[in-house]
Length: 326
Ligand code: FRU
Image 1 (cartoon, helix red, strand yellow):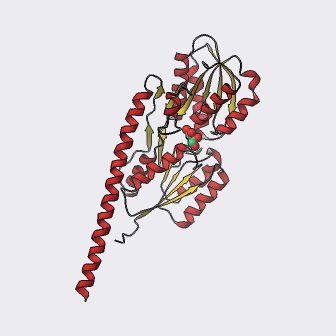
Image 2 (cartoon, protein in one colour):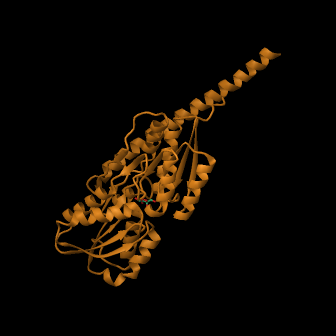
């Protein structure tokens, strides 16, 4: 059956290679499969803001009806997103933001609140005078700015916590480890590390272990992804003491995209909920995720069975046509 393509949705991703963003894309594809007739144009800027601008321009030339974008850095991507919006093409900003309020909808958790929650959580588990190191994301990316602001506000009322150092890990494990090793003389006497994501937090634990520093140094991250190598596993394996759930919003972005395209009601701010995962609830979270995952597999199985039947039906129709003609 040749269905005419109804809409073209462009998705400009800042970095495509990590588990969190692969999960986001999987969620999008799953939701897209429920909307046959839409074309999906995907581009991965590989962490390069200039490349991302060019990719968005290419999408505009190609002709898209809606843009979903996770801007690598806020400032550099602002102009092209504003231009897109001003052309009348709806823009859904996901996870990371630009420096402008010219967008149609936002999907993602509130990164300021996430940072604040992390700070308040640190305040409740850290006793006595504690020196803490904060490993931030990429400078100029909106979640790094907002998580940092929130964290500072969150620990404000805990005068026993002192931020000894702040470093940038650019969201990457490798960079976080390098930066941490640069200040390794400050690590003895550190009681806690807060990293803006789990991969950097896991990198911090590796550095602490390699320097034979105490195992009871608390390490807190963000993302709490399910599955192999994800934050849930890191918390349950005690690599991390805690992680805050940061939903990818992949599904919600596609749902919102179709609301906008179909001229239905939608919310401009789609704020996804977070929570702290630590040893008290990590098993529950894993059980829940396994259940969802197995249901998801059932759905996929049913879908491919339906497709097989449809193919058989279509081929039978062809045979029928031939019979009628001859
Ligand atoms: C993935 C990631 C996540 C983080 C988010 C912030 O690329 O680094 O770990 O929560 O981006 O935008």
